[in-house]
Image 1 (cartoon, rainbow, N blue to C red):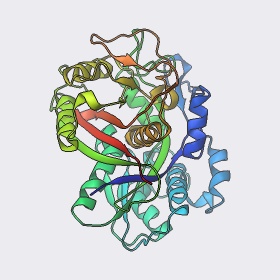
Image 2: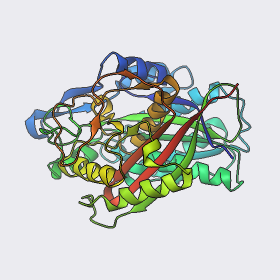
Image 3: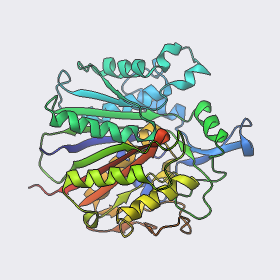
Length: 379
């Protein structure tokens, strides 16, 4: 059974559709800007933040923006974009929600909304009721692999015969809570983040929402399928990744095994690439252990920052379009390789025949995810 990644949508500082986001990336644009805030070191921080007024203007096409939080607007708009292009029976379509922090900003600034809306089940219920989904939403919140894990979970449910279609939607904000947390780790970069670079000094945060239709219903034209996935936990540390890359390595090996492909057959690798000292080093070790050092690899964090629970879904969508477009996008802000193992970093837009891709993600608590995507040619 083919599990197909179909219509998708990205809401980010780079645009309010997937096509707008790809166009902005191809132009070399980044969503990362300096935001003044005297509560933080250096008088502020670099982040990818969506302009609230612009978001509300776009949201007004589908609803009253004053009735919804910023995150809700983002996730509803992404979901609506996917539904616009499909005639789905919402009584039989699953809704899978991914977020790490949801509306956590309401605790510091309620904005006339109940603090109860900070709960992830409340966020899921709002999205469910807005569109009329009948099945109880599934919530996935497992640190920074959440968005990709939600896609993998939809695959597993479809293969088990629970439903034929699932809308996966993910989103997170750049809140003071999250920014303060990363500052306490001394993990915020003083400049736009530089994944895998020698002079990298931490992450840049970002906010985004993304949505995708996962289905077993085939259509005309080229398609991309999720043919293998695995998630493991290296049980190393609450915030630091395993120095040996054990959990990520095992995830990659298990995903390859399910896909019945080898590392030598991978055409492209979309890494987590947060630009912290330990994450990038861990990934380089894991990729080399998995015999992937030769594969063209990038991180999208230089364009978006780290969008937390949305990141792995947003980057899976971009990986899908890389396959469909036979196009590799650069790892923005990369300068000189700064990890101990060799990597084939993509430094400019390249046209290349692509058929397979590996998407990885890792997160706090030692969680790791690997997904194998394959392009099929249909008449």
